[in-house]
Image (cartoon, rainbow, N blue to C red):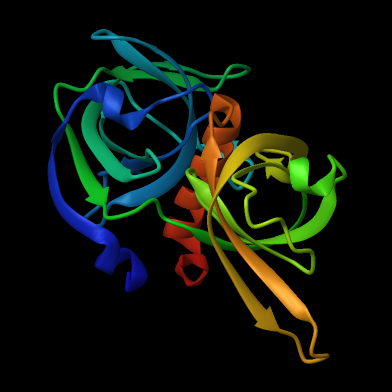
Length: 236
């Protein structure tokens, strides 16, 4: 895991609420029919606390995977600062045309903390706007993203006393990559300046999100988790 391993602490018991589950949260559903567990992607439809959880049945080659009532599963989810997992069993399968499954509510949840919110390398066009810009949006590029903030680079310099700005950018939401516009307030935590090859100044701003919309938090959470599982080279 390299970067991820250096970021992780030991697993410990956590509350169910620690997972910060929202409708649409991307998660991993692991079956144990073979010697080696098989991992699939799913998403949360909903849950009734202490009764059951409703998940989308994962698809494989265009068809839903087979699940049997009573089958043992492991569910793994990324909360943004913890990787959580729990054991459950299949309680009821709803086949075509619904393709969802009820699984048992967990009796315990294991969480592995990360030292910091995990950041993902990106290259996203964005805009920053603040009192120092006379409320005029300035072009910038997001270099990395997490559920807690972003690192952006811009040829434009913000005033030294600028403490908060507005940040706008777009993300693609699963399952059909629909574009979602994200707009949030952010606090400027650090500023650095570097020279380009053309000897012009380039400013990088470390931003911390303020009151990020829960739906946008879930999108960032899912993006980070998928990078953690599928493309670790993107993890900062």
